[in-house]
Image (tube, rainbow, N blue to C red):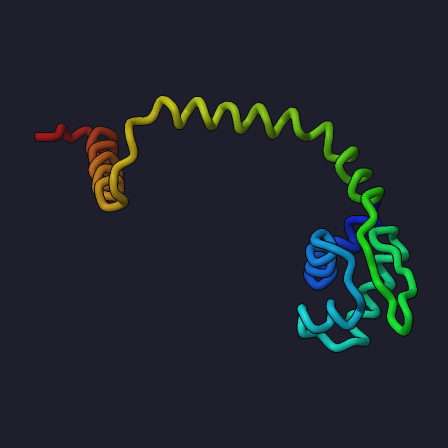
Length: 130
């Protein structure tokens, strides 16, 4: 699993994977879309191939890369136990937002927050609001 995280940690490799989600691409197409030098693209593709994220096939004079789902499925399986915690937190946030008054403009919210902060400070200091 560490190799999967290491591969995904690099932004250019994630960009390559995003391109390959759309469709198969040659090294030249990837190079053109990302505006990176060919040696850099080749280095990233080699690491992605070694970790199983992509596979290549020869097409005439060029190599065409496509995305492989297996490493992403392994990552998805690894994340599964954490989803319950996220879902519970997101559900609680949704309930909280549902109980809040309707949204006002940013200035209204800012003014209200300032007033509440001042009121709280006065109460804490023992002074009453007039």
